[in-house]
Image (cartoon, rainbow, N blue to C red; front, side, top):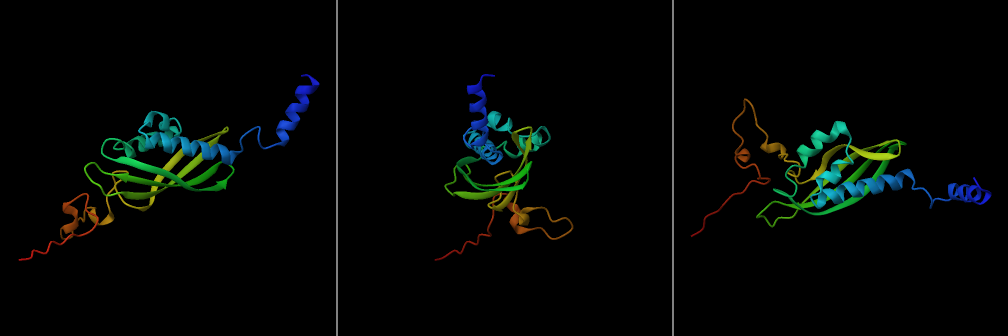
Amino acid sequence: MSRALLVAAVLCLGTSGCAPSSSQRLAESANNLNVAARFGRMDMAAELVTPKAYDVFTKHHAAWGANIRLVDVDIHAMHSIDSNNADVTVAVSWQMPNDTTLRLTELKQRWHDTRGTWKLVSEERLAGDYGLFGDLPPRSLPNPGGPPDPMSASREAQFRTRVIAGD
């Protein structure tokens, strides 16, 4: 190695601009996955998912682009758990076909760094509207052994609706 290359390598290691930090790589991976999912590129998004999480990820995102239209995806926060694990909070704005209601669901994504590459390990609904992963509000779940739940008649109902007929 020539002296000039050695000096350049030492200077590069001493500055933050040469190699991205772990948090920069996490931000880039989280952004790439969520933007790819937003635009229906599940093949690209799935490349950033661990093999163990792949089946659940594809099941949760099966309706995206067909029965669920993503309007926007916004990364709200990143929290480092340790040097190889982090949580990313993502807000997803979405709509169902033929429905103008804009829904918002906040997700918690768990990421793991393996040999310099951040991959999604798990994803769960943290807050907001149900339905993004095909999940139902708790009151719509079956009530075994109890009286029928009037809210379970509609899988999409989130609030009880009462129609008052007038003259």
